[in-house]
Length: 257
Ligand code: 13P
Image (cartoon, rainbow, N blue to C red):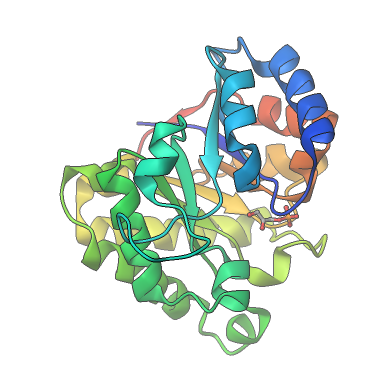
């Protein structure tokens, strides 16, 4: 059984003042919510500590947007998984399409980042998803299988059960063009089959989130799909009312496989 999860990816947005305000609203609406979806916020790195302090003892977890694959070393500007763990970070996004595109992250690097996170006790949220060109060429399944396969081949053991997969079709990110619920469900079911090929236990426990223009108005329909266990929300997670409404519309669902 899998508990629903909603993660807000704030990307490179916000300031101390706006983030403090956003957190106040979220804490008020969701901070004591034990019966709803698991909620995670992923701020830009400088605000991780602020978020951790403001969310201590609350039912909202903190996630990072990136991590380095190595434990330590001469990697100027990077942050290790152990450092994140020291600041109470419980999740980390790995392989977001923006990092694959702008920072040139490869499947192999993303797999190493997932492994580093798992070793530090942090759950990686690995992002997979095809571009519009790849979808139109009929290659969406192959692209997603390759991206996820790299992680499944590289990471081993029980810890992999803590992996979260986010299906984020690149053409739906920040475009206002959401995947149709049935279209998203078809890819989520495919991802679950890929997980099952690795291990039936993984297919049962790994949560698969949908990301790409999730909004309050389309969230319930998406989350009603059998294999959609929650969402990875970008723009809408910066608007408190919108994000709270998305979290509430997911609610606490336990989906069997
Ligand atoms: P939007 O919700 O703004 O489309 O962004 C999705 C995303 O990239 C979350 O990681």
